[in-house]
Length: 256
Image (cartoon, rainbow, N blue to C red; front, side):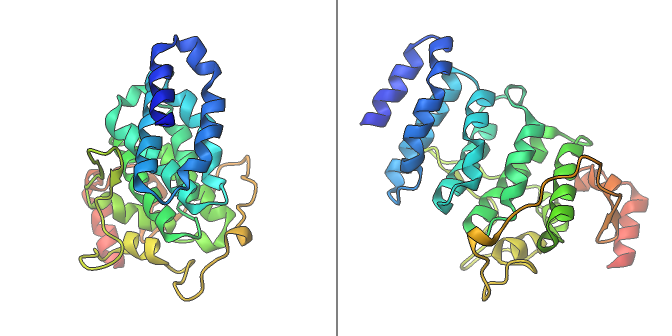
């Protein structure tokens, strides 16, 4: 009930007043984002969407972006899911897409499978929003992550496999995100992306990484060196999978 009241109030005040209270509302929401009750998480998502409507997605997401480092995996996962839901329900011109890459990509290295799954689906939506031939902000973030943390080697290939599926998650009637690619249980899809979500070479299922042991090194100010991933150049990865030139496709097939 309290969440509903706050949401109604935020929609009725002017934009300037709403912006001045975003921080207080987000601080109120963080403990509730970790609630195991689905109805509470649903109410949180709906309120965040109302905040975006009252202010802007850029304002709200910039305020909640630090949540991807929260100690609670539920908070981290729901934060990424909110970004995904917002991208799927609001015009792409309302977002700072390069900034979203910086939020979602580090979550691919999260020690919790649920967070990595959320991040993989979010990255697919970000790639779709960036558009054909405009994936450089996403690929740059992936290259930085791989360069900064040896355990993340292979994450770019995993993302490429996810993009090649040409499937996007959806937003259910309750506002929560339904993932397009299953990564656990019966009906799981095979592929490098699913392997990464499940554990991959960096996060073996039988040797989980402690959340307090994972640390991404400070990013370098110089651009990452040109690399190849599975026989495909980084330049080629700036395109969506179905945009590759025939010679690039042949080159990848020759190396597999």
